Length: 154
Image (cartoon, rainbow, N blue to C red):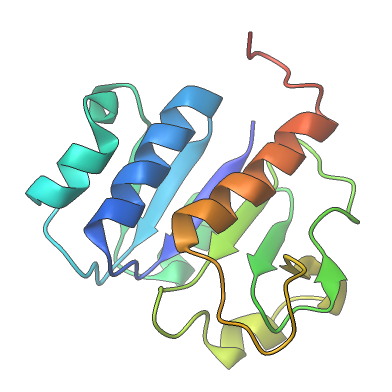
């Protein structure tokens, strides 16, 4: 129903946690290379436990290839630079949520390629550091799921 795209993720436990979240929420996970770890990294596997077999994960050499290979409804870039609160949009099936690498976020060119209302953010204390990637993914994806009445989840 929904898609999560991790652009060049760097920290194995975050990606492992997100694999677990996507498996439990029936969300397609897309990983964009380069990855900051090997897919068989023990920290990532430990965080994802045994959910790897239930998660649907696709890996791409670039964001462009990912976008060409999929028919996403809309793409929402998740960034501290966004002006739209993540709870404002009305999410629809096949929407994709794009998250940047932990240490630098999404490139400005990616953010500028989308309509301003599709660059979303999680409200936070001013001048604070961003939330952990896996926490941010959980907050935003579960808002999309809530809006869909958790369709297909029990």
